[in-house]
Length: 542
Ligand SMILES: C[S@@+](CC[C@H](N)C(=O)[O-])C[C@H]1O[C@@H](n2cnc3c(N)ncnc32)[C@H](O)[C@@H]1O
Image (cartoon, rainbow, N blue to C red; front, side):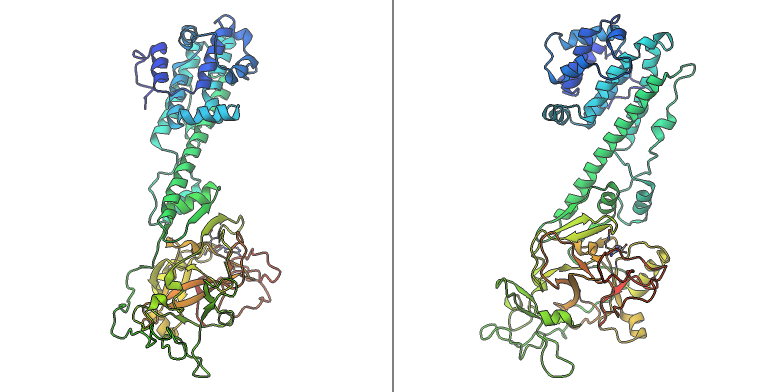
């Protein structure tokens, strides 16, 4: 990238520089055409007369942007213009700079297909045009001095392009990123640095026209940086999404702030991440035994399957799954099971029914539906599926860092009193009392690591439910999966929601806690708040 401040202009006689640049394909065709147009119409003496004093692009030049230039060889045109001092080097450098950051091929195809001037191509066009437009003011500000001013600006803009490859976060985003454990390190950017640091060399004055040119250049460079940054964020995010196991998880997000938060500050994981101090019973513990069902006879038999939980008031085993009525290839959670509070113990490889061929083996098969993270507006990001979801269909797991209760409390205290989003989910299904909770309970934190379900918002009239599911390790009662199931048929593209107070008493509070996070679900039965502010983390306790 050329340093226009220090580089002697020797090897760049304007002619050579332009021809070199053109060989490298760096100057968009439209700029060429305009230069030709200007050269044809503007001999140095004619220029002030011909060019619209208001600084807009002359009609003739506009026309030529769409027409192939025929009558003037670019080389000759440039040489004429340069002799007249009408194309300052700085504009040339800036043209190159912008062209480098915005592939010329791309710029050209944008121009040609749309038949209009894209923003990126506008810079050199406008710059050239307006610089020429300065000629009438030469008595006030000699062209050479104008060029110096622009040169100075071009250096600052170039520095800015070199220093950061497009970080245009807001201060708020920088804060969010600074708090994260996995940020892509970026220095905070002062968006006004160019404007505030530019001042004309001593003794030079800026005409209003030049000042407006400089402002335009700055906006174009800022816009270019912003676009480059968004492209990079999308790339980063798509890479992360592509590493998620199973059918596609995509993101449909335009808001730069939300995009930055997701791309820079969140990692998708395919299983739990275990934090410090989390004790686990190993899967191969001698106490983990399978059921006696026989794969070669009746398969898994609900009347004898030891994996199934037993009803409290009878010896009946609770059968959680059935064949889906509207799609016989699908095993879904039973309607009556979804209404109750119960944990699912699935069969696994230790079982006589050989686990993976057993009907009681749904969550372990993994996600089978596609998901899309999208911008809901007032509720931040949300989740939906482009697929039709059947009632009882398993959707995905809620994943994240598994941490001990004390750690969860510390994390929650950091955000206490604020309406910061909460991603804590207590694994409290088998917790007996407060002492047991303090000693054994674990919490899943989906803030920095998680799955797509971490974006499921709350609704007071939800279409999903979270169910505790134990799969390969039935003896570790404090560690199980949190699995989302559809509780009714869900049309493609419908936002997925669940009740954040699931398991708690779900009555409309007499008065909404003024410190609580207000609920924006918009349902007729909305309770007005997500959680009472005293407890933001969710739990699955029955
Ligand atoms: C688990 S996150 C859900 C994803 C979140 N919307 C995001 O952008 O990352 C929970 C947070 O989402 C927001 N949220 C979820 N449901 C909401 C609702 N019904 N009304 C208002 N905010 C909601 C709250 O800020 C809550 O703390």
